[in-house]
View 1: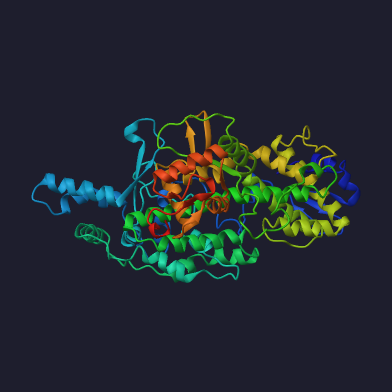
View 2 (view 1 turned 180 degrees about the vertical axis):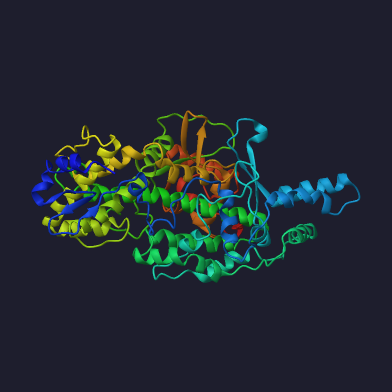
Length: 561
């Protein structure tokens, strides 16, 4: 609990005291308005709720468990299922074979098929690999618990997203979930058509260890996501509904692929990783620009005005015109080591987007939510969590409300700085020419510098950097981190942008901008064309640049030549 007397003396010296904004006990009192309690604990300042942006606040965890969690939450499961290592350890004894050596070889083959690998955090090579049970069939997630990422014999705990992430991404502007796509998605994990005799035997062994139903139900996943979907509706719908419409189109594309089960599951994982990573970048950028626009309403906040922003006042409704469009400047991976300079756009754009927008995303959300409470405390309307558009509209329309709001958020900033200084008034005062909302953001940033990476940067890195294939972000040791598309991610993007069509080069580049991506330079465009040609996904009708066409490698266009 803060020292009310010293804090009140400090509050009474602020300009807001003339408007009746002061401290009374543990509350901010506002003359003629409701006021609000002063957050006392660090957790009270976090305010991470953003139902329009994400179903829950994520934390970094390997992407290998994304689909496992979705499937697990779509079925009844068991009350006390065993660890997946129990299944792995008995395969050598239960699989068919004329000798222990044959059974051991079959067990190793089945383990490599049913378990995926991901990079670990240990220093030694032998320990730098983690194994995850893949959801090749619904029986596996419903019957077993995933071993933790550190390799210990303990239950896996969700850190990133539970299965609710899929209904969230499949939500439509009307508030419904695209049930058809959800059922087609779940059918991938219940279909037995491409299972071999040995695959079926592994599933039989799994049923012997942990018997139970293996049916998946779309209704069960939707029902378990009811709270998430209700909060989403109360928030006025999803942030950037256009990007969710793009996800639905992309998911339909991937589900239509005629691929072996494991390959299809890999593509579904890549698709989720791509959309979740770009969503976090998009949210970080747009919410920060909207916050800047609110700050620009106040004297001294003009420099923060988001000049040239498309989505600051409202969603532009077009991903090619979004503020993120083409800002993730990438280079094409060559499959071999390729040096990078710190001044290259792939490095500087990563650094700019990550340090300025992705890292502070939790702070932007916390600031927006505290600003919502401050708006109501000052006598303004109640707005949804992180709804900076409604906040801006309310402040822009009422001068008196704007002045009271500025006094409340300024006092909130003072209270936070006061607490961070050990309940000391020294250094707690906010400069008089600084807008209160900007001061609040800086005070929250001061308290989160070492921890905010967990909800933004770490999540994106686990999705598209710290993986063996399907990368969007790469690094040269610790010298530089940068945007780079490897072959797996490039394959997927060509499929998503081109579909089964032969697309002109300029159209392909425009399609990439919908995912925020663009080659870092004209010379990189040439390298990208070489990479696509090497992968069999580029056709040239002449040497002229405009005669280059992109297509996916499984689509034949020989008749067009």
